[in-house]
Length: 220
Image (cartoon, rainbow, N blue to C red; front, top):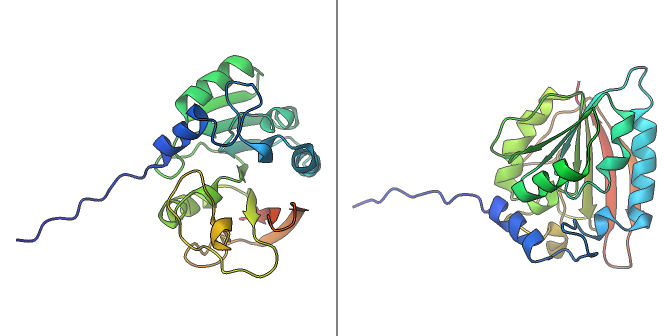
């Protein structure tokens, strides 16, 4: 007798809750800590600078959706340069904490699973070192939703030099760098359609630890 295969639920929400509960990305004596990538000045400061240049290049401020806002150490520096800043994360306690500690008239927080839930509307999606933690199946569910935005600013931790993109992983704390791979949305199996792609920033980490690359995609 053939048994119907039951698809296991994606473990992402529980995995990310555990990251914060167990300080798997480290700690700096705050309640929530999104890791060195969100706090080291040599990574954060150049990123914030190029994002502010981009956001202030428009005649009128735009609406930004930050998917995977984390502890908001970076997002808090961008809010004033937007007409509306919508910050999203999968961890409910983290979002509640952010709501209580970051208050601005044009700032909204939502707890959503961007792989499963409908995304809020905006002009630009920021996805900063988020997809690198997700399985290919989850990324494939996100990519079609990005077509609703004019711009996508994507940041990924990648190996230095040439590498095979999009080697699959199980969603969680780790990333593809351990498999000498990284996310490239323009390559299979994702095949994001864009009008233009511009690298905004590339930060080389300590030897052997890869690069953190930020790319601006113009979608339409």
